[in-house]
Every structure is written in C-alpha cells, then in structure tokens.
Image (cartoon, rainbow, N blue to C red; front, top):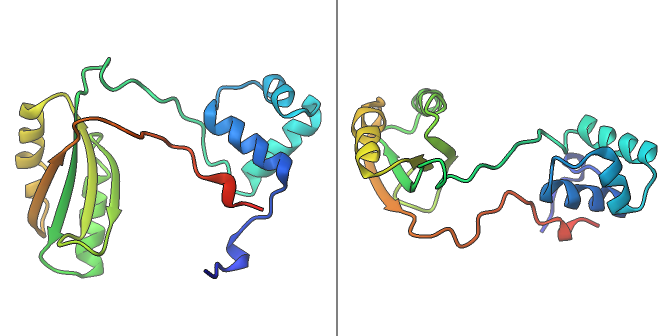
Length: 165
C-alpha cells in the first residue's frame, strides 16, 4: 500500500514511546513522562513541543465515564441524504456539529447511508426527542437507521503506533 510520504512526519523510537505514553495518560507531567521513557526532562519537553509543532499532538482531553454521568445510551445512526451535493453535505455537517450529543460523525461509503453518527444520550426518551426534533429536521435527511450499543467491547482513542518505523 502506497502512502504519500509528504503527508507523513518522521518519528523515531523515542518519539513513538512518548506518543504511546501520552495516549495512555495525557495528564503526565513532563517529569513523569521523561522518567517513563528514559530521558531527562529538557530533551523530553523539546520532543513533545516538536510533536505539537508538527501537528501530531493535536490536543489533550480528559475521558469521562459516561454511565456515571447518566449518559447510558449510545446509538449508532446511519443517515441517508436526498441529494449528494457539496452544499447539502456542508449544511448537514454544520448542523450536526452543533449537537453536543454527537460524539463522532463520518461521511461514509459502502452502506445504504451517507453518514454515520455516534450519539450519546441519557436514555431512549432523550434519544427519541433527539431523533425527531433534531436529526430528522435537518434539510436533506431522507433516511435514518438506528442501532444501539449493548456493551462497549473496545473503547479506545489510542492510535496503533506499531505501523510507524
């Protein structure tokens, strides 16, 4: 498989270890990170800053426990659009980006749908309201198919860094 080399950033084994550690715990202090990867703090900080400047480290987030916050229902929604025009897609994407319930939105192919959304809400009543009063009211939505997550078997934000040389 060929990947355009100009889109890739070269990283070494130390950078990879930094990325692995930060994917596991983005709240590590520079001192803690340096100890885990076997560097002194100054070179570790320089490397982290270089990874940020290269656009590899985009942001640091905190992962919350959705169930403890009462957000127990996760739905995967496949959405079909009536027209496949850039304007229709842009309007849809702009609208769903305003909904905090939407955790992920993908323009997809290979299904009888154009978009796949991951939505988190407290319960089925809230989902019903979200679907009828938000999603189906977006101009161009012609079909909706919902599936509900029974259990999160794998729920990771970590990228597979084993492919990096």
